[in-house]
Length: 195
Image (cartoon, rainbow, N blue to C red; front, side):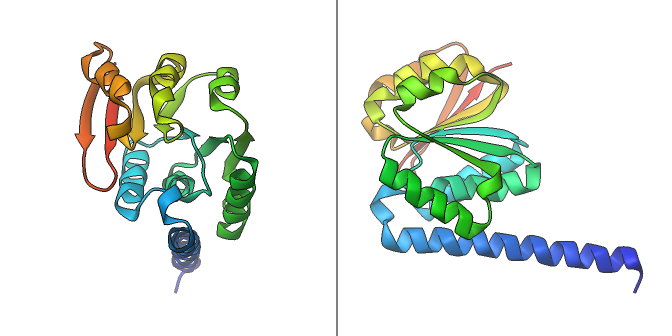
């Protein structure tokens, strides 16, 4: 067997082990805290969208204990990207950090503790993918604040959309956006920022 083939097989095995490790932590989180995190069908959609668009910079508002972030990490491991995630509850942020370490992704994730309405104002663009899963009545404010930082052709995803009618109206009527609603799982809006 050539050295190149051996290296390729070893890299594929390591990649597979890394994915298994992340998925094991996602499964553990889902078993212990299912109501505070995205369900697997929504998580898979997050991963597919991030990976298929080649997202390298993902911003998440509402970390909880880290399940959605880990779904993003599955994609970011392929794209070479990073995640910045904001959580208002310091206990949940600490649990998320522990989960990221257990999954081996702590170097690709930056956790910011505090009110995202305040802390996210410090962000600079461009953002490839923005994920909203924090206070639902704040989604429209987040859109107004961070939408301009999302690159043209980037995505804005929002979870639990039934609880955010003002936001849905903004992304379905705004000329800068094209939106589809994914109603499987707990409801996800997928918004393209037009080029």
